[in-house]
Image (cartoon, rainbow, N blue to C red):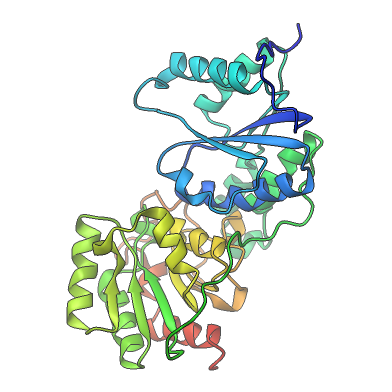
Amino acid sequence: MGPENNRKDRDKRYDTTLIAVRFSAMGDVAISIPVVYAVCRRWPGVRIVMVTRRPMDSLFVNRPENLTVVTADLKGRDKGVAGMLRLMKRLNSEYGPSALIDLHNVIRSRVMGLWARLHGIKTWRIDKGRGEKKALIKAGAKAFGRQLATTTERYARVFAMAGYDPGRVSPGIMERGERTDDGTARIGVAPFAAHKGKAYPPELMERVVADLAGRGYRIWLFGAPGDEQKVLDRWAEKYGERVVSVASLRPGLGGELELMSYLDVMVAMDSGNMHMASLAGTPVVSVWGATHPYAGFAAATAREDLRVECGLACRPCSVFGNKPCRLKGEEYACLRRIKPKEITEAVERALGKK
């Protein structure tokens, strides 16, 4: 059976249409964007319809002309298996795709892939390397001794398998912000992460903020509304006008991304903010705890000499930092053994001062 491409008003500018799927998390969606943009620019005769969820769509700034972003309502009309089937039916009716590129490989995207195959639409799915990552966790990074394929590389492979190799992938998708001030270094600090095993202890990060503010730098603090905002607002009030809580301004992901393009360096955990800074082309000082860059999630602009981490043999204890700490009596020593001055020294290196 051939694809049910019944749409009458096809866009004749494009030879074919690909549906690409990545719903979450924020960091994973951010990593996919440079790859999708590279495919669009290398293959101008191909239209890509990127399916994600809100508010991830706001990360797709400066979109190529042949990229369309569609948001799925995963809590409403697109909820569950039936919702995914309806979603795929709508996408097929509206865009008439020739292929589905599954960048997520979860139940939702697999259901979409099943519908596509049953209707004659070719599908390609990401290989997340789960076996390799399991071996990394079991052995520990020191014993394992090698870098796994990065998530960027895994995304690129799926498109290449479908016949649309992205070629060279540039991490940044926006121009750097133009400076109009006195040139004082601008530093972003995003101290939180989705899991405890990835977040530098707040009392230690506060010392980093105090040190950087004391050196005369301008500091922008990134976090979510609620408890994170309360912590950042307190730091901003305590350390003076040079320290601003972006969380209290609530500019949205698009606004945060634009602000990051004006920063000289970003301090972040293994988190979505690390990858957002990379999209903005901003150098990243990345702090690693229970996770490890070997698993393939390091930001493209996070130079190795700007990675701050402790060399405990038990790292990583999980791919995502969501497992209980293995050490008894010294919980998350992988983070607590990192001295605040190691982070400030990395910032100085990023600024070219050391």
